[in-house]
Amino acid sequence: MTTCSVTGCSYNDEHEHCHAGAITISGAGADAACATFIPLSRHGGLEKVVAHVGACSRQDCVHNDSLECAAESVRVGPGRDSADCLTYAPR
Image 1 (cartoon, rainbow, N blue to C red):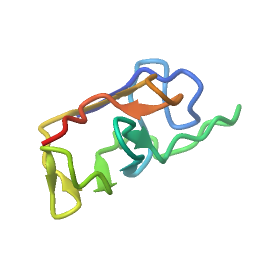
Image 2: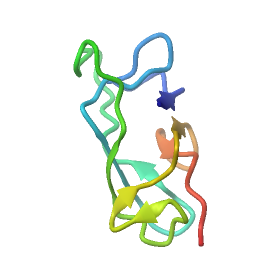
Image 3: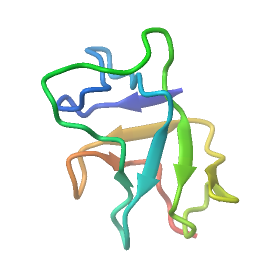
Image 4: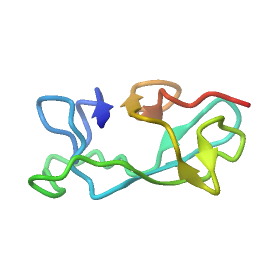
């Protein structure tokens, strides 16, 4: 399961669930940004699907396995950017 506490994202619902088909994690250094974050007033995503990490370009993360996230669950929330992967942990 993926939770997201970013209230300004078009894919997030009022219960902290991301409804994008998949999220992408990017960024550099200590910043593991959610590249799927879209700050629009219109809501989008899939009605019954809660997102998972589809791609992760953070090769230095302990959860990264062949550019896919192997973490049991992922938390996205405010960090250095408006939406960061709070599950990111450097190797």
